[in-house]
Length: 217
Image 1 (cartoon, rainbow, N blue to C red):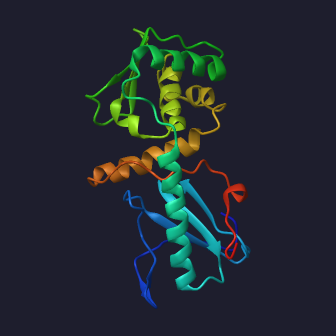
Image 2 (image 1 turned 30 degrees about the vertical axis):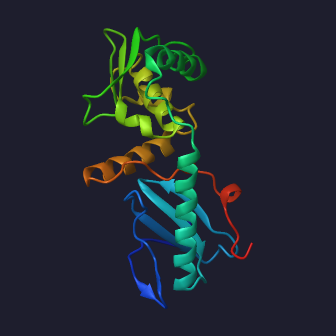
Image 3 (image 1 turned 45 degrees about the horizontal axis):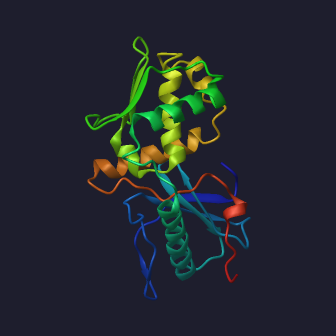
């Protein structure tokens, strides 16, 4: 972890009529990171199941509250604008997407016999049966960003090649740029779901300065 940053989970606290939120509207924990090296920008990203807001170390509590609320709102707005899979798309479109992902990231080595949505998977986002070449995706994914669904689909495609979560399996996913971010997103969604909250998350694809905002701009 870079020196100068002090990660902490923020708690609700009052100061001059302001409150720093501890969770997003979707129930995802917010972590505020103050950095002495960060002088002019505020950045928001989704990491390790949390909405991480990075702010300059000199911010007052009031400024922290303002910018945390602003950046969390920005993340959630992006999610609302993200193209999501159509629940009525059917198996043909899903199979087509699987074939496209297999060609792009697995050299076409994974060739599923069937890919379909299911409603009876309460503890998994997806599952695969290598012997039969079948893939099933939980319909709970239908409210999530496309890059998250692509990750789960690619994950199950990789299982058709490597059945276990071996080192060889994870190497198959190395080429997909959103692997770690999607895993963190799903951890956050599972966290919210376990507490009876909306599992939808604010979206951030791991970019830093390009998505940063400058206070006063």
